[in-house]
Length: 498
Image (tube, rainbow, N blue to C red; front, side, top):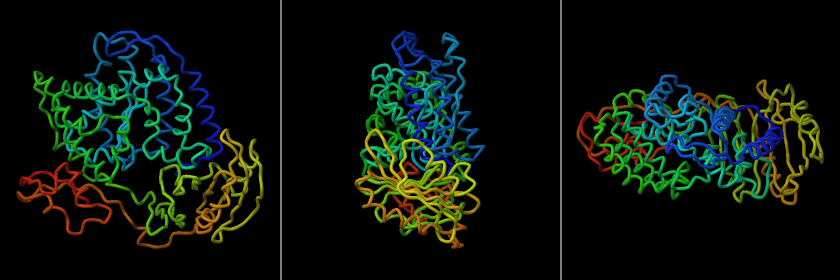
């Protein structure tokens, strides 16, 4: 978790929202793909600046996956695809052609990929583990490069006056002060901040990026039709989860539609005779990648949240949804009317100092405050009210000194309803304690193990008998882009948990 104070972030979110709103004014500029001029919400220079300013927030929110070799590999494929895009062609205006791109791997198990304006492209380790070869990765990266090249965010900004960007500011910074449904702002982060940025993408934009992704990958020499298997996997992921579509496809065409469309698009580029699949190289880079949730970064089991690296534990209020992110642990009341967040207090030397920063801010009325202890550790508790545009919220804020750091529990709800949730907040806060269970302290994540099939047989025969409880046989089949009854040929590489 990164140390960030809620109220500072909320204030910064409002400032960013104002800045972005002022920033967005219609301007006539060129489309790098068509060469035609049209109205955009930003100039290209402004798009580059937005991406540059938002990128550190994305990194702070989700964390980078620490694997230099895998990251370098993704960067290389990204640059290879980018080189075939409309942004790198000889007749492209220099302002587009000379814009550098940044490709990042985020440390998230969510199957996700997105881009920010101005050349910032992100893929998660969760997405990478669900790919089967380099050609599929090339199409995904090409799709995101296509969003940037087509200037989709800026185009939508011009037509919608960026009415949604007030929400983006808070999303990128982590959360907003409670308004209306308490959990919704945090729930929106279950995808990505960029998902909010592109929330208004039309399906025509997504289809255009599909076309461009296939074109760029094919021109880079890849067998782009391979991507159809990945979109088939996305549909199976959505079916397995009971949701209509996976999180990062909320505005995308249905995965089943794309599964049928991708081969047709690839066929249009058949004269190029692209045939590179790159499975062996891809699989070798994927070996050892963290698979699924990384318990070292915190996990919930039996109603208790554990953080092995930071060596603490606390009970989760009954029924609350837990969203664990690098910057915070958010717990959302079942009806989304209250939220409890744990984060670090930035730069605080003591619990009292951290509380003083909160109580000294404008717009906050302190109801009660004072020194206390939590599990024997020095703490300071504050109950107060804060005025928001949606009304008055009441909050409970506990600062706890532990392990040389100051932790902050912040629970809040509409003032009139606060008493209904205060007991649940206090249960979690007062249960915060040192983690001493060696089996949990020593827990390690599961990682991808690449195994060549020893024989020709249905995939279900390769499912480990001791499959970890967080994985099902069907999920493992989806990970490998096969069905349980599909026959695996001897020597075929398989992705299995270690």
